[in-house]
Length: 73
Image (cartoon, rainbow, N blue to C red):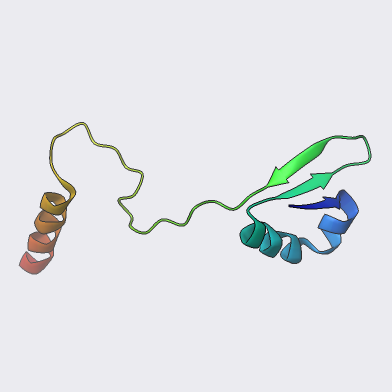
């Protein structure tokens, strides 16, 4: 895990973001002793990822309904 100062992070922000993607996270330390973790968010594979429904409809049924609706238009 990479640890950098605030000044280093500010001057090389793109590199810090790239390092967080590669290593999982980067710690940025400030002069007052506080530390912050920069970590990338997981990339969604589908727009439906992470959406919870209160029905018992399966994902495949929803996708079939969407396809049928698009075909009608």
